[in-house]
Length: 355
Image 1 (cartoon, one colour):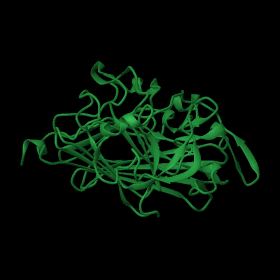
Image 2 (cartoon, helix red, strand yellow):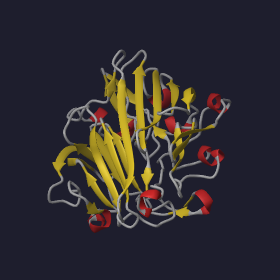
Image 3 (cartoon, helix red, strand yellow):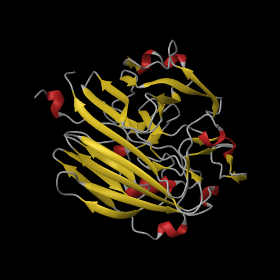
Image 4 (cartoon, helix red, strand yellow):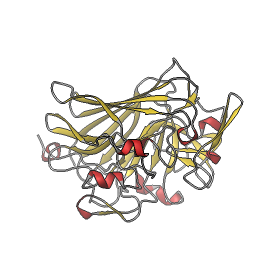
């Protein structure tokens, strides 16, 4: 085995939004729970159903030094975001003839569920098993009718499981209990395969299994147009260094890819390669889209060990429904009705090759 295969696949985990939990959530116990299998371990907290660290030999993920830091975070590091991840234009939508006005938290728009989204509440630990061939933890959260303006009660469940050889499975389920409602959950991770304090990710190569993107306006709200990536700086159908094209994009990448082929079966979404270390991340999903974001507006964020993170310190691979789908009938629907649960699966595989 080479040195490359014995070192940690290290990466950065972040999330984007802010707010405070409601009073009832504050009185619940917040803890840290470990999943361990072989030489991989994951620490999670029920604050935001968040990943705190993922450790293979030598390294750790970027994050904060204490749970209090997560609770006071304005970057949503490591958390599940919802009820609707990404953006809804104008913080409003119509459903079955009713206009719903949401709690805007990014100008006139809503981002990642509003001022108090799923990343800023305490989740219940429903099951926790850190033994055997597939250690796992299950978090649940009951989102009430009217929370952040969304209709209906929603029961959300997230399963984190270590399986096989260095694989992390994340399964999300949401059940509308009494009314149809939009649902689009995401695990908003920021990755740096060179390490949390290794600098930017511009030399990383990425391959994205999506031949189209959903165009956006100056506020990063989709226009409704779906266009081919061929011949544009968004074309990563073959692996290319991120920095080789980023100068052609204002600020950097922040766009939703339409994954190929369409459908709800698990299939490759992206692969990231760090040639310096030989580390590789591969992501599969059943979601229709994936937001590729190069942490363009990350600035002066103080993380573990006091290290400060700046723009392009990481990349995000947010599998999801299409942003603002509630306002674009040509996008795959994100409406979930009673009796027809929402299901979202992400599978991460970590490996190394010769550097």
